[in-house]
Amino acid sequence: MLNKYPLWKYIMLIMIIGVGFLFALPNLYGEDPALQISGLRGAELELADLDRIKGELDTNSIKYQSAAIVNNQVEVRFYDTEAQLTSKKALNHSFGEDYVIALNLSPATPTWLSDLNANPMKLGLDLRGGVHFLMEVDMSAPLKKFVEETVSGFRMDLREAKIRYRRVSEVKNGAQVEFKSEEDLDNAARILKKKYADITFKDSTDEGFILVGTLGELKIKEIKENALQKNITIIRNRVNAIGVAEPVVMRQGAERIVVELPGVQDTALAKSILGATATLEFRLVDQENDVRSAANGRVPAGSELFYRQDSGQPVLVKRRVMLTGDHIINASSSFDEYGSPQVNIDLDSKGGSIFSNATKGAIGKPMATLFIEYKPTGKRDHDGNPVFKKNIEVINVATIQARLGRSFRTTGLGSPQEAQNLALLLKAGALIAPIQIVEERTVGPSLGQENIDLGMQAIMWGFVLVLFFMAIWYKGFGLVANLALALNLVLIVGVMSMIPGATLTLPGMAGIVLTVGMAVDANVLIFERIREELRDGKGPQQAIHQGYDSAFSTIADANITTFIAAVILFAIGAGPIKGFAVTLAIGIATSMFTAIVGTRAVINLVYGGRRVKNLSI
Image 1: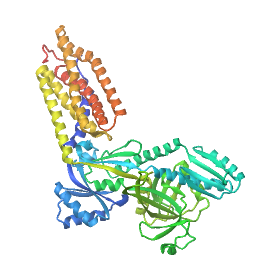
Image 2 (image 1 turned 60 degrees about the vertical axis):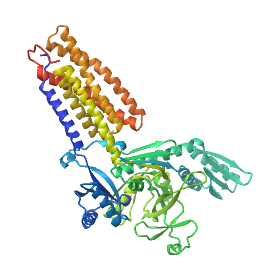
Image 3 (image 1 turned 135 degrees about the vertical axis):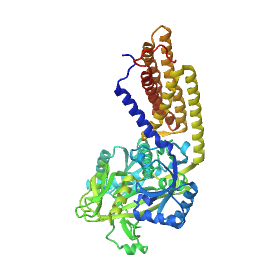
Image 4 (image 1 turned 45 degrees about the vertical axis):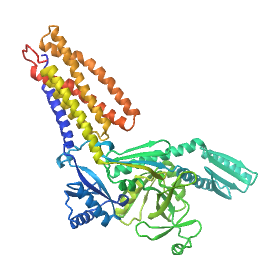
């Protein structure tokens, strides 16, 4: 029978619309002013920390909605922004050195919706407010580090080959080796040229037997590109770890990175996260010299004195770096066979080879893990590169129990919490090159709210005018199209809320306005085709059937070509263009569903299987 849907189609339609309503619902609840409180350097917070924070708020008679530990951070919600600002000032005064305290906006979604994973749409910087940073990467640092590793590698390879040399030293973008004889120089050149294909070697016998290896332009470019890309990945991991919704981290030019953190109202928090420009190093502890003598100013040559991060105790370590944190690809905390805390570390293949050679002669010796932090000074050197202050702390000392390779464990940790913190530092990654914030900009939540209000006005005015036109021009069928249009907006919001990576921006709202018109366009084609069939003398049921079937190919062609354009915009675009492309693509998919399947289901329910003389069209 014409124009009859089976029961399963109506059930499917109701289920899809129900899911859309469910996931769109959290957007009606808004957000609460909140404080996001986390431990320094990612340390996990416990119930004692929560009670301490609650006690301070109660002491200052500050009213708050709730306070709980969420994702290893304390989240305190308030009734208004005045209480939020007052509490931040009070907590900073009492606990500023113990915690990172930041203003934030937390969704006020009911628990039953959150339990279903139904969360509000993520809003971009232009709608929600937040902070924008332009960061410059110090490209001299990765080059220097690569040269240092090359010098260390030359020494190791020559020792393994039992080739005598006077010394290995650094030169610009390379390393220089001095030998005692021409025979040693020739043997070394043969071995090193075979192992270091990316380095150009040149020997000289005019003023001694010297072999110089320098990096080519392609290798230098590769090192800089690799440093920039790894920095982007690590920064993205850092801001994701503190719960910033959909941060934007992308490169700008050859040496700069743009970071946008929607919803973050406190630039101090962002700087504390992004400015933690750090790396890790593994070195042997110097047991041959007295650490107390070194602490009094008599540091022996070939060693350096640093202090424990937790206790402040001095530790004397060798200058020679066994391995840097650049080669760590994973780390996790666990317990050894004796129930003591340990950290399991995985290296890349190159790091495994380097560490294996470095530790084979150091079994039974203590090894220190150094946390090296670079803090920007705001100054520049004569080459225009940013100048950083270097701070080094010892975060762990463990005994090497066997020759270490790609996977190893470090023990001797004081507590499971210390093991978790060390694993967090190792896994989060160390920036390959120091960075400095050269530009910062704050977009206030009031400006973001103004953008939202203006965008919503544009959507609602477009929606109302389209509803008015369809109801007047197509009568009863127009009302059905209007119902489908309303469902289309709900589904767009629901899908945007469901997709983890989807973020609504101001251009994205423009995409929604565009899809409102496109959704009605499909119904216009269908309804006009039904009118043509009626004018040709077809009966109402036949006209409805032919109208939907005949118009489908035209609607599909138009929407598919537009969808392809949206995919291209998303693939090659950036920032606002991507936001527009996302909402446009989602809007096309939902409008096809509501305009064709949705309206036909309603019309079949009203007219299908009945003797109808006239259609309200």
